[in-house]
Image 1 (cartoon, helix red, strand yellow):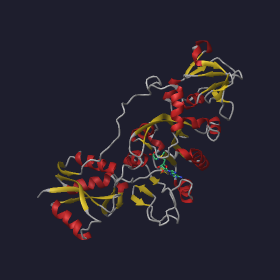
Image 2 (image 1 turned 30 degrees about the vertical axis):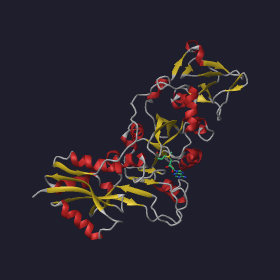
Image 3 (image 1 turned 90 degrees about the vertical axis):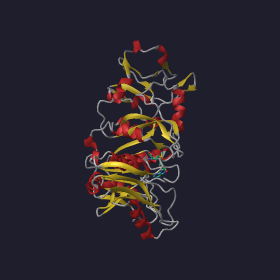
Amino acid sequence: MAQFLYIVQSSLEPAKCKIGITDNLERRLKEYNSTTGQSKDNIYKFLFTCEVKDMRAIEKDIKNQFPHLREQSSREIYFYNNSLFDMYVDFIRSHPLFISETFIKEPEKKTIIKIVKKTTPTLQERGLTREKVMTKAKKVDNDEFYTRYEDIEKEISMYPISTWIDKCVFCNCDDAVGETRTEKDSSAFALFFIKNFIALGLKKLICTHYSGQMDLFQAGAKGYIFTKEGVKEMTKMPKGYTGCFEDPESLRILHEEADIVCTNPPFSRAIDYWRTIINSDKKFLIISNIVNVLNTAYLPYFIEKKVWAGYNRVDWFLNPKREKVDASAHWYTNIPIINRPKYRLLKIVPLSEIPERYVKKDDKGYLLFDNGYIPSDYQDVFGVSSRAILNGILEKGYKIVNNKQYIPYINNKAQWSRVLIQKI
Ligand SMILES: C[S@@+](CC[C@H](N)C(=O)[O-])C[C@H]1O[C@@H](n2cnc3c(N)ncnc32)[C@H](O)[C@@H]1O
């Protein structure tokens, strides 16, 4: 008797799929559609079918592999979004009991332009000048820029696994499901933690997303909770819950449940978001504009060494059409950073070795250093860009001397913002 494994989905429930087994695929699909009474509104369709050697054994392995994605332990209903589909199919295809594929749904059309991977190219290599970078930084005000999966993977892989083990991660600006029937898809933060839930040893993952306005009809859930016992839609939310990070229920989750907050918050609310996270005293790993390090809301925490830059900058995002757009952002965190690789971008050398074109004196007499140069033998206060802070100069025996950004003037002409620092 032939044995088959299938992934089936109802058109009414795009956030779920059933992963089942049968000896007759055609009959099984008819059964699904006859139980609901086939209608225009609710049609079950196979997303994937394949022949396998021992369907019960492979079904059991799927259960063990994705416990956090099962809706109920008694039924084979799994959490679904387009990207998770690839994960389920990859697992089945690479299983030793897999024989051959018999059907797979058409792949989603993707408009993402591939980027050539490079390790920290210079500004020159990227065809950029400092002015262009600052203009790009100003562009980071669009709330609907989405983070690329690879940028999240690259940053999170830098932290030891002990950071995540048995922790509750809260992604409070992240849609776990995505409106997959439009160009918009689920958040790569939600996706990353869902896919790596077991590998990171997470205790819980909570993803909430913003509805934009009051949900007058209390229609849609605004979040999902993943644990080793399965996935739950947050259906019983307090009346009027919008998914806003400042909503009382989001704050309750932040204060009472979360251990680590991880997201790319709306750029236009960067300061409010920062205050919310700082006041929570929780660990965080978030993305923000590179120039925010100089903001009066951020700077005091850098001065007190309560927060610092994460490992990587983020130069590319996806717009709602999934097209690549550039902007200058960076990871910010209060999780310890070990042997920051970006120290190598700091050129700490005697003043006499710094090329003249990278040193300027401003109208107040402060020296301003560019291009990563830092004088090792200069005792006075001097100005550097936000990059020097993000590259870890405060961990190299220098301190910030003024809790405000510094706008230098040269011949009465305002220059781009710096921060004043001094050797300790
Ligand atoms: C810069 S996007 C990033 C989305 C996602 N975190 C990612 O990294 O791809 C910011 C997201 O926050 C949502 N948002 C806007 N205002 C919000 C608020 N007050 N509370 C929570 N989320 C909000 C936006 O709809 C948008 O999806």
